[in-house]
Length: 163
Image 1 (cartoon, rainbow, N blue to C red):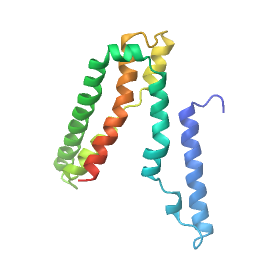
Image 2: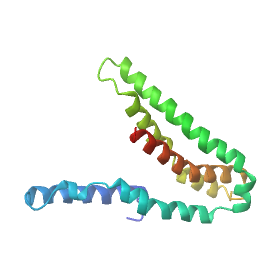
Image 3: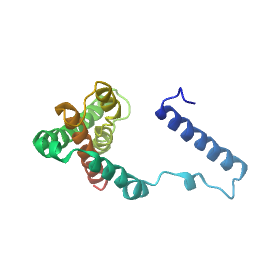
Image 4: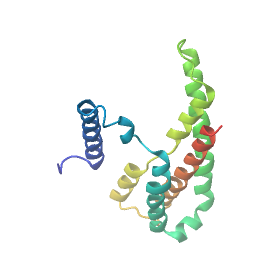
């Protein structure tokens, strides 16, 4: 298993857990419900996600983050909002043009908010392999933007869902 990337192993574990759930549902139809294995977004957002973001915030260079805060805020706030609306509008109007089911605007914007949050792990690993660290501008901009981007995307998505 050493030759598999970590993401591939996570996908395999999730697939195996899903197959076990399906098997248990077929074998024990009265005692087991698939909803017992369903994703709980409140648990994820309230319990699992905050420690991840907190750890990332602790590991960032505070001096470099403060020094570049203007650009980081611009990229994270405006970038996330622009990405949400451009993605959502594109999905809505492309579904309208396709002459099939038109996805409602609100649903399209929720989708846009969901995909607006980036995961910079691959980019940061490439930058690290190029011997860049938190003192380099590009590294701190990407790291800081991704740190704030998650919270902004969650807030925009939750705001749209609650409408």
